[in-house]
Length: 100
Image 1 (cartoon, rainbow, N blue to C red):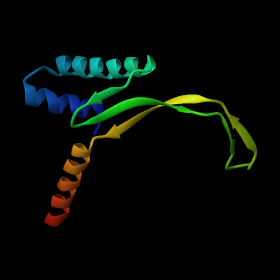
Image 2 (cartoon, one colour):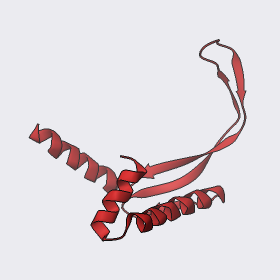
Image 3 (tube, rainbow, N blue to C red):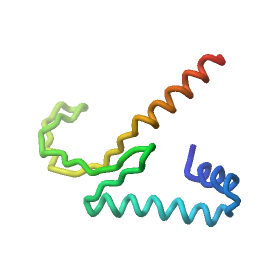
Image 4 (cartoon, helix red, strand yellow):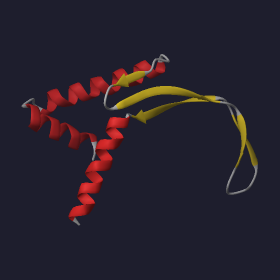
């Protein structure tokens, strides 16, 4: 599912136009990105949480050549799904597989 698919689905379910819905989704995504850039975490109950994790500097290997490569310290965004979200997906997939 792409962002355009999400916009279309939300727009049809809310009665908002696609342009309005896209603006809302873009606003949400930009807010998440900005919060993470500032080092803040975001928790959405029943969905999950976003945070930034520090990765220490290390040496890795180039898989093609086997050469040792230095990877500097860096930060990566991470997302952890809530228990409710995981349980809902699990139930849905089990029900779907029962039908097959």
